Length: 196
Image 1 (cartoon, rainbow, N blue to C red):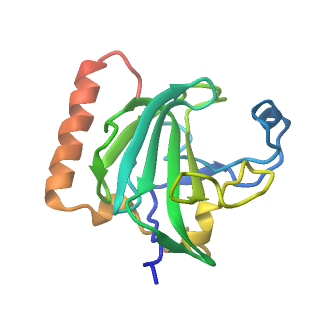
Image 2 (cartoon, one colour):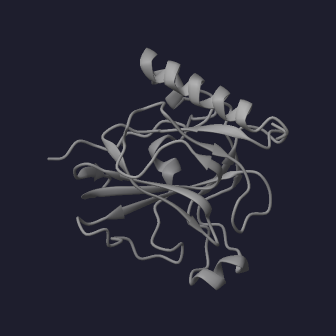
């Protein structure tokens, strides 16, 4: 039997600005009706913020710009995982980033800085869209629903995630923390006029 998928929260003080499965006519232009992920941000004031890898045993499948998602970081599990009733691969995406901090093919670790969150693509304000999918070995979606075949990430950390949060950055090893700080402060220095 495959090991179960374990997710941590990809940012400190995470708040959800739009929940998975919410009905919204905006998504009809993309061929589905309900929100296909969680819209998250650190607080209501930050325009740029770090987005950390919430899993281990994944690699970066793609770093791409799309009209809807803006700068996207796409991750896929290295091997099948148990995701509730299915043994399958897990595919996740973080959208609307200012800049990705990883590249295609990178193996990623818990707490690693994936991107600087922002407001690129079809977005109504600074946030990160966190999508999760159960897929087969070829990347075909295994769930059929009107949320683009996605799966609710909250199912992996409810019901007490607000009272007892488990942040990915808190599980990062020392080398990852040093690398994160280097990348974050280098990005800030390279963008001196960007409000944070």
